Length: 106
Image 1: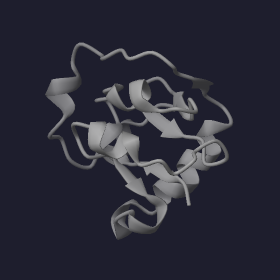
Image 2: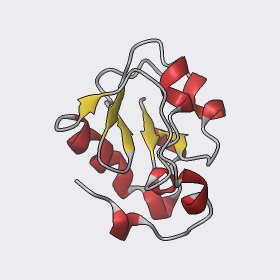
Image 3: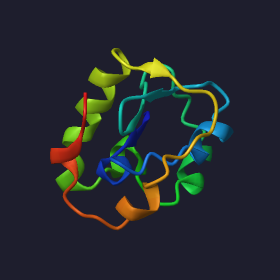
Image 4: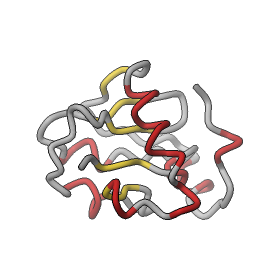
């Protein structure tokens, strides 16, 4: 079972999770991160590090976010690995915004 980055990450893209990942399974897109399910070792370290609670175990993804399981798998094949923490300057402005899927940039 892999972990999944969900909608809360869009336009926030805090990367605290990247610092603790022992296998570098995070991939970076223009305004969001995803987890490569083939690389994730289910260590759970990233979950507690995410300040916007965007990361879930695949079995615990909220019903209204289930499409992110497929999105993580798909986009992780297209996006490049990220191995260093960096935070966009406007991340805090987007942290509490709801319904952000329309802002996802591929």
